[in-house]
Length: 168
Image 1: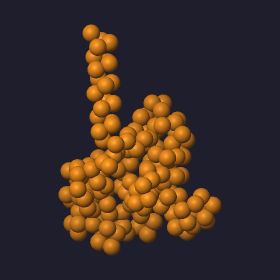
Image 2: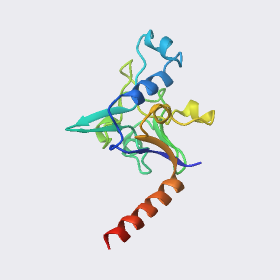
Image 3: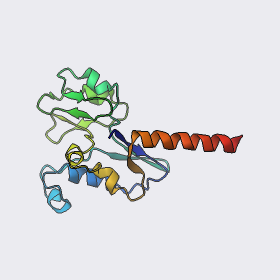
């Protein structure tokens, strides 16, 4: 199933539950109490940014023509087939930060050891179990939803028709 994380900033209340869930999902313990005691602390791959009165959860958009993949000198940044996540091979990453510089969303950051980069991987381990990304599961307001691409486009078409007909 090809799916994407859909962001609705109108629903985001800035609670940061997505950040916490992401960090825990990427921790060694995979549970809150164990993750809190880890050194280095687990790192979130989603960031809730606030501008004026709006909160916007930001994470990697897994671009089809990903600038981070295109610029990576060691091919540590890799993209599979259409609709798949952009992943980092930490063993190949030399920490040159080119990917960080070209990401239009600011979704790539230094890892805790300050060599390899860190970014959203759509919770690859959870996906292997048939589970959605942790951030979407933790979002109580529905600001983050993991939605099949076809369902998303069908909804967008329906919304367009309704808006169009109401404005006519």
